[in-house]
Amino acid sequence: MTEVAILGGGPAGAAAAIALGSARRRPLLVEREPVPREKVCGEFMAADAAAVLTRLGLDLPGLGAVPLDRALLASGRRQAEIQLPFPAWSLPRASLDAALLEAAEAAGAILLRGVAVARAEPRSEGWRLRYSDGQGVEARHLVLATGKHECRGLARGVPGRAIGLKMHLGGMAPEGAIALLACRGGYAGLQPRPGGGMNLCAALDLAAPGVADAARAGPAFLAHVAAGSALAERLLAGAEPLWARPLAVANLPYGYLHRRATAPFRVGDQLAVIPSLCGDGIAIALRSGVEAAKHLIAGGTPAAHHAAWQRRLAWPMRLAGAMGLALNHAPGLAVSLAGMMPAVTAAAARMTRAG
Image (cartoon, rainbow, N blue to C red; front, side, top):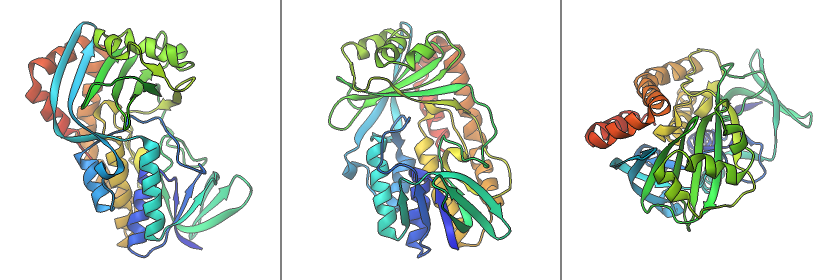
């Protein structure tokens, strides 16, 4: 029987594997993709994410991440600019995931790539993971790190109305800046990528007009975001979609926070889904993976792990939810207030750092 199995090799699962491996626990890390690939993600990381990565032995500038120091906000003809109150970076998920998985193996984790888990079943003394090929493994403890995707038998059971879209673009991004662009059905984030080009990622209501078409083709996605503001129209003018259609993940339960005391240890998006405008999803994933590992090393329980995160995320999640509602339902007012009160906006950004 394996002592600890980690299901999912994204930032949360890999961080847990590094922390456990560094403590000579040699966890089993099961990742369904044979090689790291891009995922629906804004690719934004602030100082809290950087701090966890440093403790894990990784360095964002060393990985080629692009530094960011300001944010642009826009809705219709309204526009605002604020200085970010913390250092931040942009790094593609494929690059981040590859570095984390390499570090996990170096720390002693046993990595299974290209293995899909069809179901996780509780047993009297642990868990049974059933692979899609009929094989499987038993583990005493399970860390659920499947990100936005559910594991059969352990689904979050929370409905979500949002769809996440992501597209890499050729073109010139605003230097050193992330742009938060209101559009019909939600908002999009645009930021530079290492080596040139841009990452466009959006959280949208699938029922809103035009969103279904935006999910089917790159040009339609760009047109949908560009129609939301003069700034988006200018930034996306001449941008070239690098994929035929955007990556998409539906039924995202923004605002979800796991409140059950039961096993397994949940980390990353299986633990909490903070509204994406905060850009703290990767940081929460990294830190929750490390904290789950600490509980396991100390003989702690999933109940204690989940309760600690309920306390840590209660206020940031409420604030992030209020900010998301304002941007969705009164985007022009939200942008105007951000421009008139940059210090308040910067303070709100700091207060949503939960990673």
